[in-house]
Amino acid sequence: MNNALLRQCDRQFQQFAQPMPVALLLFDQAGTLLVANPAAQTLLGLEPQTLGQPYHQLPWRGIDQQPLAPESNPIQQALATGQPQTATVLGWQPPSGQFHWLDVTVEPPHWSTADLDSEAKAAPEADP
Image 1: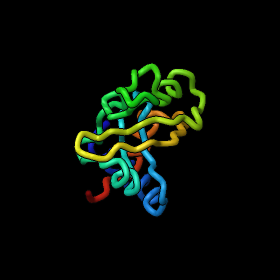
Image 2: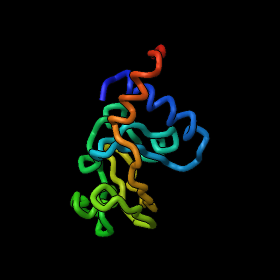
Image 3: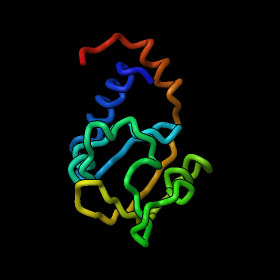
Image 4: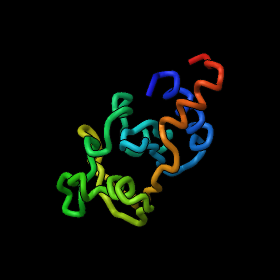
């Protein structure tokens, strides 16, 4: 996905998610983290370089507080099955932050980056 498209996606997501007091992360169909709202950035201690990383490289932890295997991640399950994954308890351990327990719900994407590319080509380039 190109940078202009990523900025456009981020702006649209932030307009929707900015005021929400819950952490929201948006991944693409490949499981790459596209954007995170301010609550997610604060709660999860996300650094700017975290955007663009695949879900399996993020600091998820299982109920035993050990690194979560990709196939056990509800993001992988939602991407593989196309079905929502609800009420999954996961740990989150950023390298330089506090451990958190999270109640995770994953809604699989119903769009593709090709859809976004089409929209971006139709829309004029906005200032960054």
